[in-house]
Length: 520
Image (cartoon, rainbow, N blue to C red):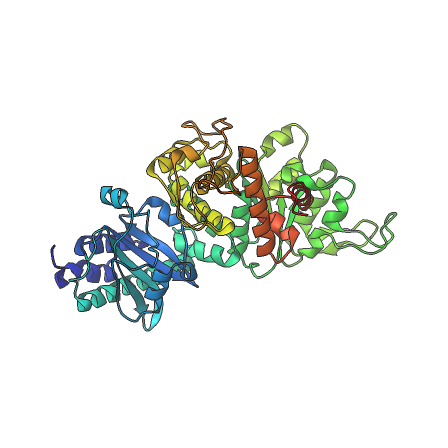
């Protein structure tokens, strides 16, 4: 075993002041550490609140970038964050290692577990900014490392991480048209309860467009196929706008009944029609000073489009039964999966309204055009599924990741999430509660060309004798639905409307499903 030398740290010291991009800086850091230490994997994680976010890794599966490590759920990482100095964990430690099943290589596939683990808290001027971890399959791999060497390594890594944060902040402030670092965008999303996962060139372009358009008050039209994440893009636009501290008011134009659509958008005066026993504020008035999200704008009734055009052009609305126009300050963000130019030609959408909405257009690319995002998204959905279903750690076998990456995904990100949810259910049926879950390629009902495989095989049972094992795929699906609904309702404190939004269901549909499943 080669003993690390202080000379091995020289590249890190030079990189702190070098003119490097954030990605290059962190990439070089983990590569230098991997070469200097007798390890199989290295990870640099940035602290965001109580969550550790992977910034750069070496020797770990690529789906790790879609995962988030909460301190409360990972005792080893929590110990590192609380420590003042580098920490080694004994080979026989009973604390679960966060990277079990994520380290790549033949040795790991054979042994299955990490046996040597060390970590360094990264502090700058006393403030914890992240951690640097190294893992090895061989027991005792780090026993001979010098503590002083590790302290210098931690100091240089912390300085590099802080330098990256400062450079990224200056770049974002100085040039909105320049490249915006992924971590800064994800910081905003995490605070706002959303996340955008992936590192493809297409997603980088999308982030740049969002960063350019978000600070303005221009209307934005977000286009793209069903399931690509248009609503998520809209929420990112709002989160990065000057109105971020105000409400994002949501309207699904496809769900607006024609009889009350005008009242929903623009309000009505008391006595305006039979049953109007009190004044009603429409969505535009509710969103005064904030942002209004018109989802499925292509479904808006043609007779309402002139009033929407006036609201966009003049900032004026008029409630039903009220002769006085009211001025409102509303930024409109709209989304559609329709070809609005074709709708204009067919006479179903006004050309002048399209021109007013289409001041800034952001197109969300389908998942088949950004295959590099599939693995990080898989890791993200696996973590979300574990939290909702209460399973043990969820990992993907290599053949599972290959199968996911080979798919065409006509249903885009939404289809990917559904496939992984079903895969988690099947894989978790093979283990006892709380044990690690390994998703195999056969657990995923996606063919090599994408889409459902079409099989209706029975879901695998749990360990022999388990009374609660689903018997068929329908039983398994209903069991998953019950657990997800219970978890969502509990998460939102019994608020079924909020639970429905999280699950992507209208409130009425959620209530009907809950009754069918025996939850109400």
